[in-house]
Length: 353
Image 1: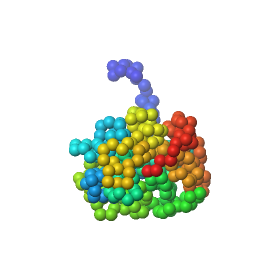
Image 2 (image 1 turned 30 degrees about the vertical axis):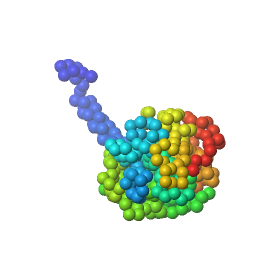
Image 3 (image 1 turned 90 degrees about the horizontal axis):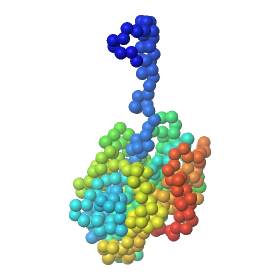
Image 4 (image 1 turned 135 degrees about the vertical axis):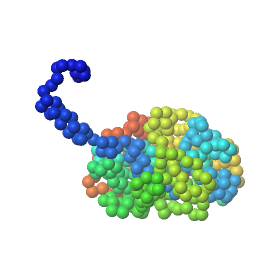
């Protein structure tokens, strides 16, 4: 590049031509809005508006706080065996978070969302157990149709040890190896410009289905996806923003999968009977909650954890898809542990959540 004092200047016509070329190139360059969407942006766009029923009765309810969604290390550590007790300690943060992972093929994005509760609890002694830690969630399949965020075609939710499948109105996907259980509806968020899918969890056991198959009955929380993590003002707060955490973040949940303080085995959270878990109820079970790579329906074609780690396989088994579903992934961080996940699927005892 010539400095301002140089006498070797280009002819005027050449300088004009260069200016035109540079201007045209600038106009043709993609703006941020036209650039490829990041996985974090994609997850935020499709994150559900989430209805959480709240039961404030009984000592294990913590006045409703046992039904708040939060992060696994809400208490400042990665010890899964103290979460029951820490959930009830004064000063412990129960700010709202949810986890996500994105897996990609050439035609679809598959986004898994994971909602964590420190307690799966009950308030009566009749034949129901409770346990430390609780993990339920949903898988969304999004077709890459050329638009920025694609179009959502299906959902499969996790309610304890059963999966339930849904399609939105107008979806081209229909029942396949499993019957579609209902319609996934959408709702506008007051915190962005998008229509979001709507999910819901029951109180106490926290099974997750499409709203309104579960709904708020009395007290409850409505969580909205955001870049902020808010703490509910009470057990009856209908506008709480939750923040997303990437499962594959450096040092994150997937990176901790071999941490024996947090996980009893691959995909199963460590939980014990300390504190008052089981007191006044039928019993308290141990190691009874799963991360997404441990979710299992038990009587479907997909193996344990494949709802997250091989979602195209699960989607092809659950739904009839007119154009078919490629099984080769262009992005799948779970794949590096494929052998260990397959062995866990073969040997892990059933976890009754």
